[in-house]
Length: 273
Image (cartoon, rainbow, N blue to C red; front, top):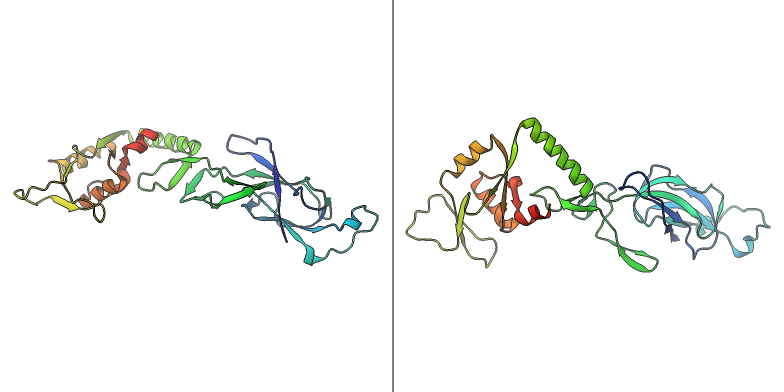
């Protein structure tokens, strides 16, 4: 049998990223004797990780007038965590009878500061799942809300992580003695149109569609674009932005080869930062 533990409120730990939660014996459960710990301080736990094995106390034994007997292993119940984090403290002793509502474990919750495609990089929790708490559906909360890598939009980090990465970028730019130069894509580096002039030479023109049923697009690098990028890259760290879609931007970067895809930055993402 499995018994999901209840979580109580916890006090704040060091820093805004850490919060300690108290995991309690379920209110609806009978008193149970703690048989075995499945975790220890420092253990990483996820939602539904087994914390301990317990044996329910039969009603006639609750008064305490009978000596403790060897528990029936078939009636064991698993106490499980309802959150992800790191075990900070085991609050009960082996053999102790645990009453409903008693604190079993204190856990420093994971704030999921780095998320890739819905998975927390810190604890491995699948954040796309919905967990039940006291009969209500709730989404797991992540502090990761900033996209940091242009070419990997699924990678999200917390604002604290983003600020730290920003400081490291700033220090790197200072060491390299470079500034960041942002260059618009359309009408600056390239020219794209849906209207292809048959009388013009096809030399240097890239023809493509963004999807089945989409119009054919015709793109050409503007004069001296290659020379400009090669020379300016020695002086600046280049980032290219566009009002266009991500698919459009990366298609352009791939077709000409002069614009590395990791330099493409969509303008809406810039505005969010």
